[in-house]
Amino acid sequence: MSIFDAPIARCEAAHAMVLTDSTQRECAREHACPKNRQCPLDGCFAEVSGVESATAQDWPALAKH
Image (cartoon, rainbow, N blue to C red; front, side, top):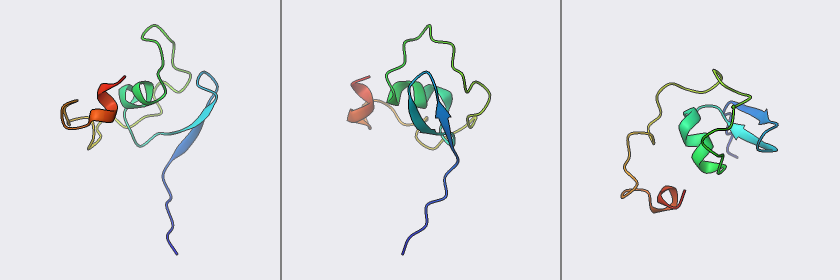
């Protein structure tokens, strides 16, 4: 059995549960948020993430957004 206990929060703008251990930028990219959207979870995200330093070239799925 595996337990995954990541911090999550309900985003009313994206109508989804989102991981808050990522950066706000990563979350916006993952949920296709428009650049001008006021994030209802502003201030709830990690400041640094291991994925944030990766380039779009290293992460083809992220390059689509």
